[in-house]
Image 1 (cartoon, one colour):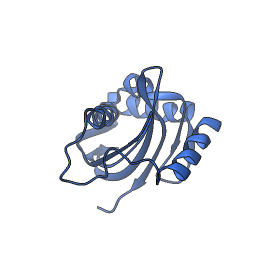
Image 2: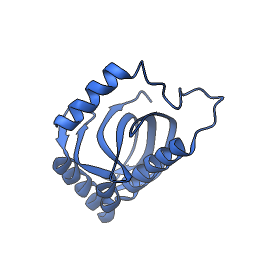
Image 3: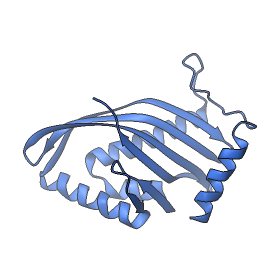
Length: 160
C-alpha cells in the first residue's frame, strides 16, 4: 500500500514536470514502449474474456489493488477470487462473452511507471439472458525486475 501511495504522490507532484511519451494525440505514432503496454492491456482483457485467470494473475504485481464499478476496493487476493469465480462461470457456461472490444487506449509513460486509460465493451449472456457492458478503465503499470506489472486498476461503468 505504501508503494502505491508513493507512486500516486510522485505522479501528482511530478507529472507536470516530466513530459509524457504520448500526450494521447491522434497524429503521433505510439512508441515501442507504448505498444508494449497496449499489448499488455490487450492480453489482460483477452484473458478476462476467456476466463484465463492464470494470465491475469501473472500480469498483476503482488501488491495490486482494484477499485470496482460499485466503488468497492479489492486487494490482489480478493480481486483474484473474483477473477477465479468469473473463470469458473465462463468455463461452466453460466456466463459467456460472445464479443469484446478494447479501444480508446491512451498510454502515458513516466520512467518505470505508466498510466493506461481506455474503454472495454463486451456482449454475451449471463444467466441465460443477453447482456452487454461498457467500462472505462485506468490501470497503473510499473516496471519491476525487468517486466511490466499492473499495480492498480479502476473501472467505471460507461454510458451505452
